Image 1 (cartoon, one colour):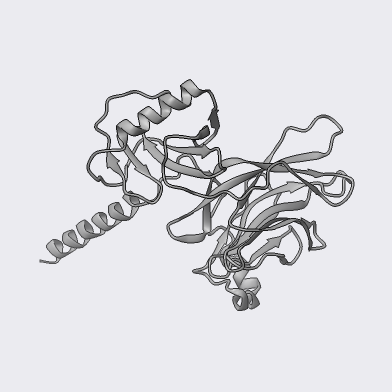
Image 2 (cartoon, rainbow, N blue to C red):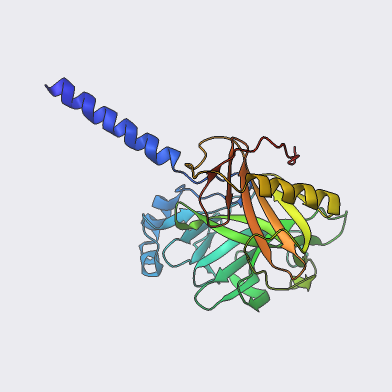
Length: 312
């Protein structure tokens, strides 16, 4: 009897594990930072006072991007606060409040002194409907505002290849932000367009706007499209020719049918952003295992056999 009970428990456990793993959000096509529990226990053990600002074992996550030279960033999923921990120093707060808080971060040499230990970051506060770019200045631990705006725009930093002896330059992208597993510390971003650039070197970082227009998400329309951006995990491909736009919209019309289906457990998901002439954007998602959905909708099984030249 004990063996039967044990077998039943193991089977139930296996089903639960499979259910949880198969329900994980598909990160394909999203720009993501790391989000782990690495170093969380040590941080909280040495700094119990962090609990006052929402840092607990359950809510604290290590969101340090790759190539951060030993510097760590920890974020509270409860409050959106972020702390920076430099090797050999105590933590200090990055000047962000509200949620989702920190969206992206890169290292830069803000002062042009040859030491890349400043943190350029983007953030958003849904409560006050603001967004911006900040620069956290090295070990001293103070922040300066590079750019601050109002509205629902989300920003993401992407490093440009700078020439020799030239200041660091970062593209600022307009993005939509998705929470994975309902966790405000575990974010993914989809590029919608360029907003401007940040130049670092020789003083306070400078933001130069390219197009600061607010991005509005609209219903899917097949007319008045200025460009279509198809995002994968490692690239964005922009289509502006009328022939390409027509081919893509014809494809979307053909697959925007069919019965609802479960979230794809395999395949690659492509995120299709249709940018309209009025500046608004609509989104569709195509999974090459045979599923399609509109932003905010359910996955549908694809019945069309029409092929589409997604980015290779």
